Image 1: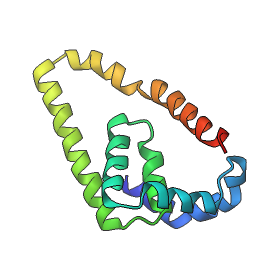
Image 2: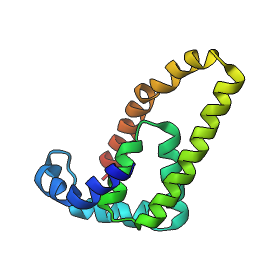
Image 3: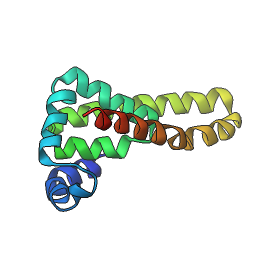
Image 4: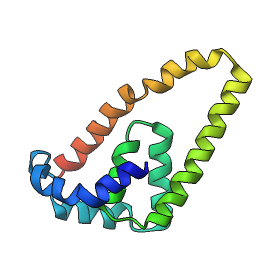
Length: 130
């Protein structure tokens, strides 16, 4: 998480300037995202928690957090709390379900197959209304 954050913080703007036009991403878009979604502490908690729970967009959200230059101490606190919670949940699942966890893991590790198209559809509809 921290590596993604610092990649976004250090090189994110250069990457957007160089390759953003391929994805229709500009610095103005980034500024709008910061105002719209990352403006308050509550929304930051919600966004990072949701990304950590769904696994699929987690790296992307960490990268965007760095690009938006979210306060590092706050970012570290949120990701640490979320990671501790996630580890506890998986330890408890392993403890109570034993070998059944191997079956559950197949569903969890392949969740990106479901969430990535849903995320793409949402982004498509958000940009197609403009």
